[in-house]
Length: 132
Image (cartoon, rainbow, N blue to C red; front, side):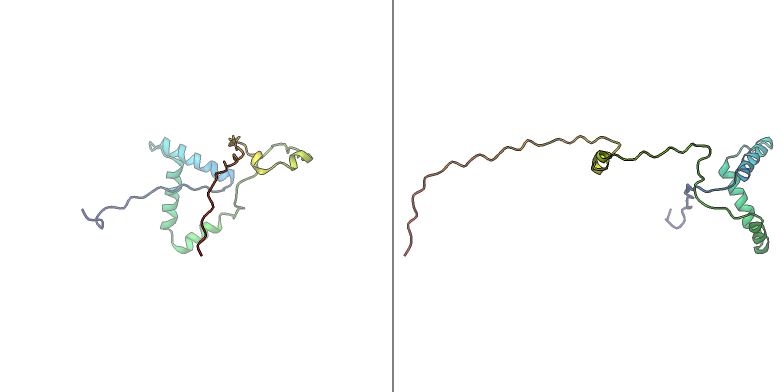
């Protein structure tokens, strides 16, 4: 079989997105509806079916569908109902700490024992004869 005749494999891609809670709840409703119809499904299947339907629309119908959905702020939503912790003022000692010491994982440093060099034994040498 040649490389050109092999069917290409659709590799799944992971992604994250932001959407209103009410619209996110609609995904669960679609999953329940599909299960009642005898077709248990996953969230990704619901989204892929919606994309297939959107892809089949004419340009004017697609534009109308997109305009019916309000634009939302992207990014991760801020945590709800979490009390803000007051920030402690860093002490003088903590401010002087090196970044290596602030790591969450302790790094054990092994110090090499350094010995002072031993004085070299003096060798008696005969003076070299100078060449003239």
